[in-house]
Length: 137
Image 1: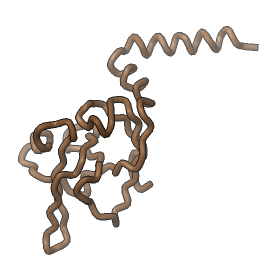
Image 2: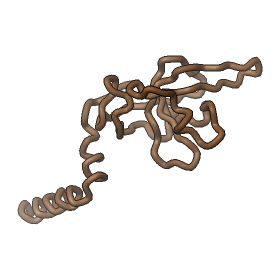
Image 3: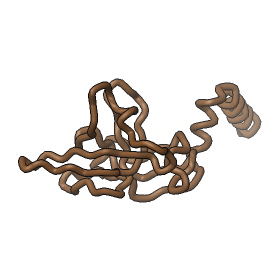
Image 4: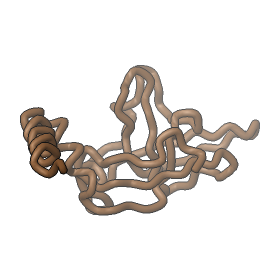
C-alpha cells in the first residue's frame, strides 16, 4: 500500500457527512501519485501523535516540482492552518501518511470506546478472560 499505516479509525466528526466517528479507512500512499484537490488525505503534524483525516482544499505546484497543499475538514468552517505546526502554512508530501481509498462504517467505534472509557476496555478483557475459562476443555 505504500503507507506506514494502511488502516486508520476516524476519531472526530470533522469529516461528516463523508466519514463519521468510528469509520475504518483503508489507505494507500504511492509517492508517484500527485496530490489533487478534493482528495481525502491522512496526515501527521510535527509534534502530534494522532494523524488527521481531512480533504485537500488547495494545491500549489512550484516550478521546481515541489508541491504544497492546504487541507480542511468537510464539517469545519475554516482550513487547517490552525492545526498545523507553529509557522507552518502548508503541508508537503512528507506529511502524508496515506490517502483514503475505501472505508467500513463504524467498525472502529470499539477502539474509540476503549480509549474514551478505560473501564469499558477492562470489562471487555474480563469477559474474554471469563469466556476462555468457562470454555476450556
